[in-house]
Image 1 (tube, rainbow, N blue to C red):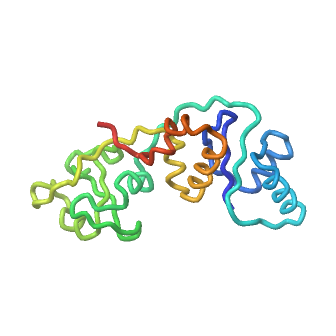
Image 2: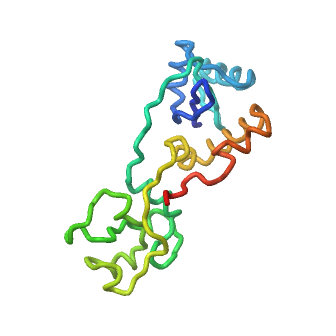
Image 3: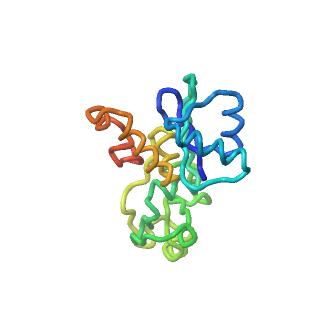
Length: 194
């Protein structure tokens, strides 16, 4: 069962383990939003059992979170490109997709930049090989751009069950006229810069 840790300001910070939750509870650093969640977790800890579902807790004091640079790794590239081959449009699971360097590294392309990496199916990546897309008559569906959203948005995309619990919490705690301003209600977590 995942545990979503929020800052005192309700900003998602991280998904933590149950073990880490127990440590934070012992040190009296977090609070539950719902007494029934608190009672359930206390019972689970006492009986050494882990339940199902998402628990949402918040820190009692706000912590300053430095702005995190979102790296262009495989996981984040798959989220940015929505698990879709950027050449042929095939939507597939992570095992069927590869990461392609638009300008091959052997030809001077940057191996780690957002702008030089795209998701490609195995067939298109094999067809492109060590060529530029134009040389083998491939066209990108959209130009690769860096992801500029906050880390919290990416965190919620990685954990859809946590995102759902967070949105439910916002609906129950935040007034409806403020909810429209919340980034989690827009559904546009990973809009590339541009």
